[in-house]
Length: 544
Image (cartoon, rainbow, N blue to C red; front, side, top):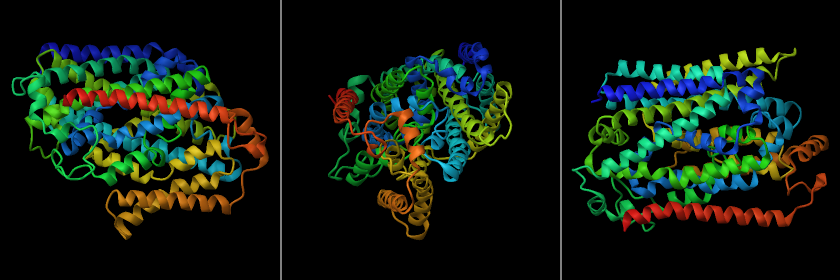
């Protein structure tokens, strides 16, 4: 149970978060470029930390607990595999995004493509990402926060919903009024708080009397639960179910990182990652920010969650809802005062993600639907008012959806499957002039058809369904690409002149720069290997 000190800490956190956000209110009044990309003046380190903070939501440690409960440490390859694509974004796409000069990722579509297909694609994709996908993401984050509130505060469902509504209102307050600068500044504070809380939980959990300290903790866990790689022989039982199979592991590391769209890990960049890149002053700052994000996100941040999740499997071995183990651990092992920090840390994780999703989603609806189809000039003040109203709409819809989400990792996998195969086009459009608007339209719609086909008409189990979907989407996209005409020479030249990709544009007068390809490939390999080594070191320390 929480005591007065805990409530004092929680209240101070909420006031400080809202205060930091509102401090930057004046910066948002200069139009939607200021509201959504900060006037392109956000320092690279703040942009990078903001990316990390956004991907740390209330659902993340809970979903990691579900994965560890099912497969041990190796279950995290479901999302670790995205490191390959993340580093690819750093060295092959980050600078291109910043050079494009667009405000949103969907605005890029009318820079890269031309005519009515491009106009349709821009608006359709803005609605699809800004409403459907974005609201779904907010929903699963809110659902996780409800679990935390119910267990940690020991309240009934109605009270939990009211508290969630209050947190949503607080995040909306500074998000709606301040735009991206307020979001990024509060992200920095919230990330520090959330990581401090997660680290403290791991320490207290391992040293709890029911666990017995570090050596006893390691000795009590099954060997395969501590393995960094899955048992590819399929011979060992997982912690609470079937082992992570060879086929699933290969799906993660060989296909998923480049084939699937996933929030925060879009192939070629996209979403709020692209928004942060476009908010930095220079192209090289976009690269630095994204590199900082990859290292912190994959190699540093996961270990407090994983350690706590492993303790939860020891203390609560028969949970019907494994995600609850993480929150029960907070309730049972943290002392007074630190419980307040933990609750504030979860609130911080939730609010940092919520504020970014709201701002990013509103940028798509404002810039690529409302403003794109305005027939009269719109003043900067009017643009900002529209952005604020659309931010409010997204926040309220996300709150409503959060009341109906159950399995967090199940939603993760659903999003991966309905975005399977689209990654091919998202990367190829930068470096292959032949990709056209119909290619991307096909790549967006084909995964939805494939999901229905392999789930309901011709049911296949995962990962066979995933491989089949990716193959179907890529093949269909290539067929449509070659059956439809390329973009006009004027459109292609304009894109090439602004973005300056180093390869793939020979018909536009751009011969391949092979030295650049080699240099960037080497940087990608070195940084990927170094980050994986740092990640592996954590698993090695646990098992020795």
